Amino acid sequence: MNPILIVLPILSLLMFDLGLTLRFDDFALLARRPGAVLVGLAGQLVVLPAIAFGLASLLALPPLYFVGLVLIACCPGGSSSNVFSKLAGGDVALSVTLTALSSIITLFTIPVILGLAVAHSGAEVDGGIQLPVGNLLVQNLVLMALPIALGAAMRWRWPRAAQRTDAVLARIAFPALMLLAGIFFAQHYDDILTNFGQLGGGVAALILLAIGVASLLARATRLNGAARRTIVIEVGMQNAAQAIAVASSPFIFANDTIAIPAIIYALLMNVVLLTYVAVLRRKP
Image (cartoon, rainbow, N blue to C red; front, side, top):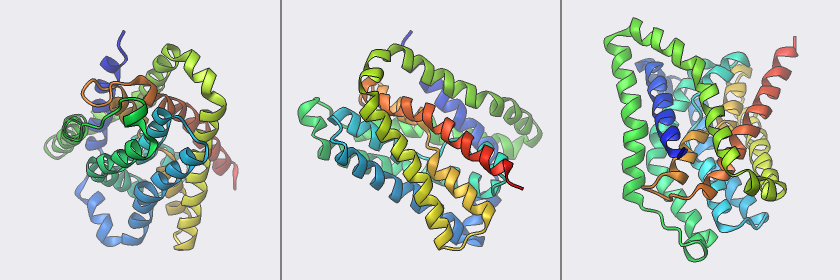
C-alpha cells in the first residue's frame, strides 16, 4: 500500500476536525490577550525553525534529513495539542487559537522556510531535490485550509451536528496519527534504525529544546500557569501528518526519506508530552 493514500485523507480529516472546534471568539482572543497569543506564535513560527536549523547544521545531517527536520519544525501545531492542553490543565481556548492561527499562517511561511532549508542543506545539488512552491501552496490550501473552512462552516450552520462529529473525530485523531507513523516506520525500518543514533538524537533535542525555550518565553513574559503549559505543548507538538504529506506527496518532494524525521518525531513527541502531562497531573 502506498502510504500517501493514507496520509492525505488523515491530514484532511484532522484539519476538518480542527475547523469543527473553531469559533469567532478563538480569533478574537488575539485582540483580548495579544501577549499570550504572540508569544505562542513566536515560539512556533520563529524559534522552533531556528532551533531546527541550528541542530541540523550542528549535527551535520545529510541534506534530505536536514530538510526533513526543518520541515517538521515549520509545520503548524498538531491538532491533538488541544486535548493535551486540557489534560495538562492548560488554557484550551488559547490552544485552539494558536493551532488555528498557526495552521493558517504556515500556509505562507512553510514555502519560505523550506526553500531556505533546501538551499542551505545542498539537497538540490546532492539529492536532486527541488521545492515546487506553487504545488506546495495548492496542496496546503486543498488539504488544510479547505477542510478547516468546511469544518468551521458546519459548526456555524449545524452546531449540534458539528459537536457530535467532533466527539467522534477527536477520539480517532491520535490513533490515526500513530497508525500513519507505524506504517511509515515499518516501510523504512532499516533506514530509521541505521540513522537513529544521529537522527533520533536530533529529533529528541528538537522536542526538548522546543519545550524548554517555550517555557522560558512564557515565564519571561509573565504568563499564568495555564497559559505557560499550553504554550509548552503548542510549541512542542507540531503537525507531523502535514510534514509527512509534504515530504511524500507526488506533487511536492515525492521522497519518503525526507519524511523519516517526522515519523520519528511523531513517536517521540507523544512520549515526551505524555510524560510532561503525567508529571503535571501528579502535582498537587
